[in-house]
Structure formats: C-alpha cells, structure tokens
Image (cartoon, rainbow, N blue to C red; front, top):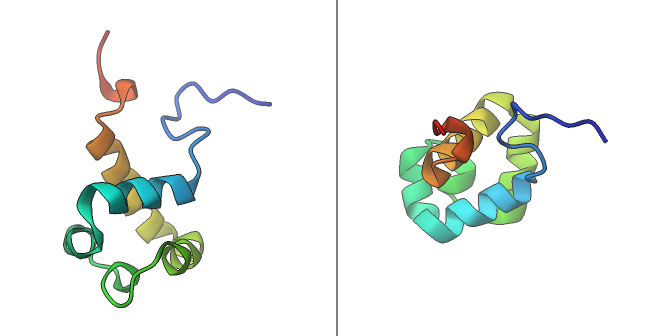
Length: 78
C-alpha cells in the first residue's frame, strides 16, 4: 500500500468524517457552516455521502472543516 505522509486525510473514510462532524456539530450547525442541502433538508449520513462523493467542491469543504475541527497534527509544528 502506498504511503501518503503529506496527506492528513490518508486512511480516513468519508463516512467517518461525516459521522464525526455530525456528532460534534449536529446537522443544523453543519448546515450553517457548509451551505449544502444534504446538511439542511432531511439530513442523513447516507444522503450526505451520496452527494459528497459526486460533488468535489462540497467534499473539499467538508474535509477542510474536519481538518480544522480536529486540529490535525499535520498542521502543527513539532
């Protein structure tokens, strides 16, 4: 398996990202932070994954929010 040391999301599935963000913020706050319909109208993990897998710009926003929320060690200086 290829290593991706510069990719902070390597090995993290999109489903895990969505679940953790939903648990941390809740659907209502997620819909405010990222203005996409899958977080605002009848949100669910399944519908969000379906949309995010087909919409690169939205996926990028979700991934960036996840990194910001987690304060990834990738962004910290040793």
